Length: 464
Image (tube, rainbow, N blue to C red; front, side, top):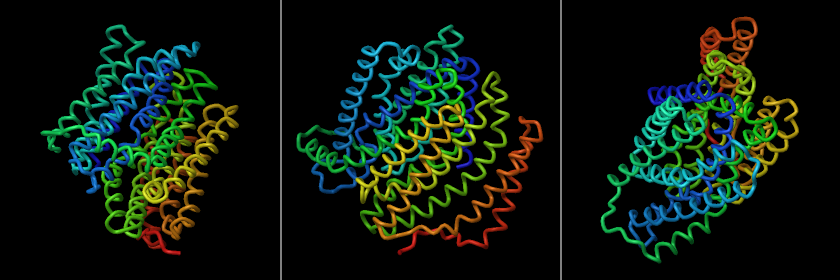
């Protein structure tokens, strides 16, 4: 995991150097806002297939083979995502005045279909237990191809299209590799398209419409702050804010490192063993993610200032919103895994939780926008905090279980100690020094292990 994480972090920093330094805040800001729209559209275009794939392929009641079902799901994803693409392009052309963001979005819109299909292909390889395809695609092939093509485009004097061309090249390269993995792991000989298969798939889609809607609202909630920055503050501030989001992305990748196996495991445990086994797995993984995010956050907080200083320009202004976004990512990534329980057992309530948290975050971000990027990031944090509280109460009422907070004492103390060291260091020392990260990591590790004996490390959900 450490090597893969280092590769992901290297790709993230490489892209930041290319996008922020070579292309500047304005072009990068337009690209960031357009990418946020594309990513939500990818979720819509995926028609919930990435989430439902494990249930569909595991379901023995289907009369078709897994290869037939995968082909049928692929056709549905391509059809829906193409429709979404057409609607987006038509809306942009009918609504003039979007400027640089609009033209960037037109260039990126055709890639919605490719990314939605890529999500489905990688989910299919995970169902076969082949996680390496997702790791290689998302951590190496897609990001590094995008960086190389973006640099080449800049050297060839095409800065207006360089980031879009890089995104397109990374997407296509990843699709080719993921498709090769599917062809190796699925028996696609003699696959056919049957009306009965589509009827079964559409029935499954209707049953899981709540889950699909939840995925879409979640995708919107994770990016609504960037929309607000672009709308309220402009392209250049959106570029600075986009850098803050990029720097704290490793915290989300900690969670994504578990997603590749956790989702199919939870789906199978709920089907075979029931709720009790699945909720214990979710609780254990949530705690592990939180423990891994602690040193990651401290390294980002300690070295983030140095990274932003290296980028130059106005990018150091992203440091404060970056810290707030880090806290939001930690809250959502570690505790958001419990959403899987609602996805498979109470999808309507899962949608209500997500919608409520998103609404609170949007209102708070708009209300705090007068404080700039810090205010908008704080609104996102308030939305995630509200969602975590609502989720906790709904888990207790829906499944008659509660999650004890006592086992979180060591991690909370470690966060507080490390954060205090970092704040003191960046206030009194050179903002770009590496001392804060090293000192915070050492003190936090000592605090963490010293307080372990005060809490039960077997962090399970308990029956009420």
